[in-house]
Length: 440
Image (cartoon, rainbow, N blue to C red; front, side, top):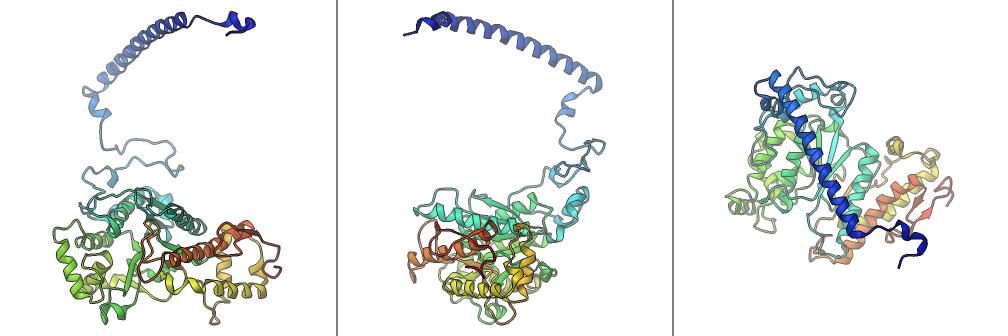
C-alpha cells in the first residue's frame, strides 16, 4: 500500500521498464556508431604513418628510442631498454635452465641504478604452505601465527617476504616444492642478492639477531650443519634443508638444477632414493628427499659444490625444537637480569631502531650467558595436518610452538608497550610499566 502523500511519485512498473529499455537501446546505437567512427579515424591515421599498424601495436621488444618521462626519478618504472624479461625464450619453469644469469642480473641492475646500490645486503625471505585448508582444526591458526612471526622479523630488519601457497610444479610436492618457488623468486627479484628459504614450521626466536652476511661473502649456500657429521659420519641429520640462504646467481641456478634432478620430476626418482639410503645409514625412509640429495652432492661432488657451501654451526641458524623450547623461560630471565643492570637496554624506543639495541646487548652476552636461539624449527611436528613423530605427543608440539611464538612475540610487543606474562597463554597480555624490567 502506498501512502497518499507519496502516490504522485509512483510510476507504473511496466511503463517505466519499457521506457528505460527503449532509452538504453537508443543510447547503445549512439555509442556503437561513435566508437566505430573513432576507430576508423585512428586506423586511417596509423595507416598513413605505417602501412602495417598491427606490427606497431603488438611489438614484443621495447625500442631504445622509447621515452618514459621521469623513469629515472620514479623507482617503480622500467626504462625502455631491452632486458631479460623481454626474451620470449626465458622460462620461469624449473624444467628449463637459465643461462648467463649473472650477466642478465648485472645488466638489469645497470638499467635500475636506484636498486643497485645496496644489492649485496638485500635479502628476500621466501616461505609458504599448502594451497588447501589444514586438516588439523588449529592448523590454519598456527600457520597464521607462524607467518606473522616471519613478517615481524622481516619488518624489523628490512627484509621483504614472499609467502606462497601455490604448487608451482605438479611433480614436485612436499619438501621439493620450494625449489621451483626459489627459482622463480630469483627471476622475479633480480635486485636481491640472497633468497632466504624458511620452512613454515620454523620460528624466529631472536628478533634482534641480524644475519652476519659478511661472513658468507665467499659462499653461495648457507645451511645449518656440521662438517664432521657430513664427511665422517655420513649422517642424514648432518644438516637441515628446512632453512637456508642461497645466493641469487648462476651457480645457484645450476646447483638447483642438479639438486632437483634427484627429485620426483626425475624418471630416476626411485633409484635416487635407494642410492641415498645406501649412502646414509641413518636415513629413515627410502624416498629421495632434498636433504639427502644435498648431502649426496657434498659427499660425491665436493670439488664442484663443496667450496661454495657453508655449514653454519656457530649459532642456531635453525635449531631442533625439542632441545630448545624448555629453556626459553630461563633464557628470558637471564635477559631480564641484564636489562635490570643496563639502563640503556631499558630505554623505550621505536621498532625501527631495534637493531641498534641488539648490538648494544651483544656486549653483555659474552660472559657465558646462553643467548636466545635464532630460529627454532619444529621438525617432526606437522601443524597443518596434526601429524607428528611418534616419539612425542601432539600436546608437546602444541605447547612448544606456543612457547616459541610467544617468546618471539614478547620481543615484538614490547615495542608496542605490552607483553605475554605466560608463554603458554597467547591471549593474555599485560601493559609494560615505565623502566621495565627494573620496575615490574
